[in-house]
Image 1: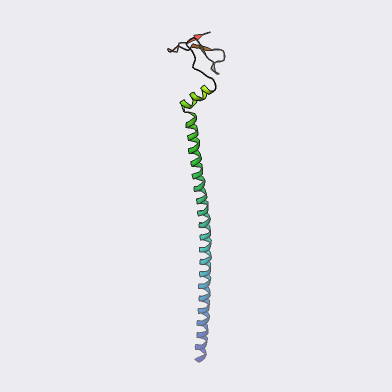
Image 2: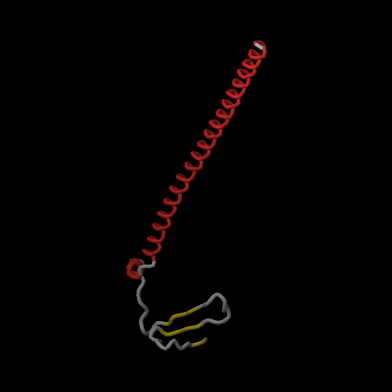
Length: 122
């Protein structure tokens, strides 16, 4: 009977060691999985931050371009620049010639004081 108890104790010890080894293996796999997940999340977070910074930079660039575009559409600035280049408003005796690219054969001429937009066709 003493031999049966020893073999039972040995079997229980062996089983305990096997269960502890299995638990340690499961714990090790879980820790490795957690580390891999944290590394992947960290990489995604880094890409997210970079994308947000790029988005802010592109938004600022778009705002600057819109501001520049609005400055070029300023009529007072255009008038001042035209004056610097020596341009002047047409007089009442001058003619305006309008040549549209789609109508190569037809040229429309208007006098400068023609407010009714009546055309004089040549």
